[in-house]
Image (tube, rainbow, N blue to C red; front, top):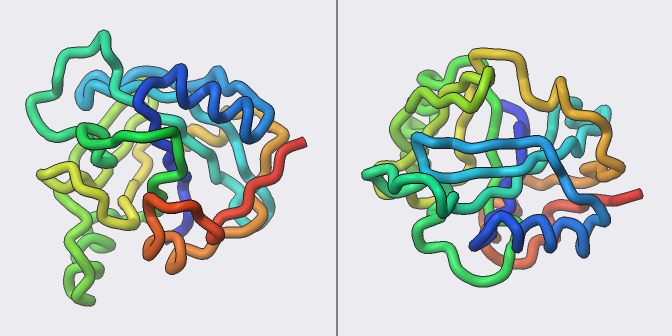
Length: 181
């Protein structure tokens, strides 16, 4: 498993974009809607040689989308407060085996594996039935990786400590260092 992306949650996408501009100096334009979850996002590249496909996702509930009939991923139904780094997603080659391995090791069940899509992107991802945060969320890409098409953003991931990040989710994090140009 390897870091796939960081998740920044916001009450609204506009709040998330304002946070991104004031914190990192950029306003990402790539992204779209996840109709099956009633969410929308913007993404930007944070790749470095250590994390060559890493990106950051700013995500919020899409007020124009119908409710999904299930709890949304990343605990967005109960998210409140200012935009913040909330979660991380780990990329794996065999999501079913990675999920089983986590459970067999006594870690919390990362959730049911569901098929997902946005535009021409296709992936499989773990989502707990109650929408709770279980770190990391697991993802397996079935199409091209989205970071492969993202232009450099001027923001890079310099430092990432998954164990510390998992223990501190939802708080100010010293486990991740991003730098902007």
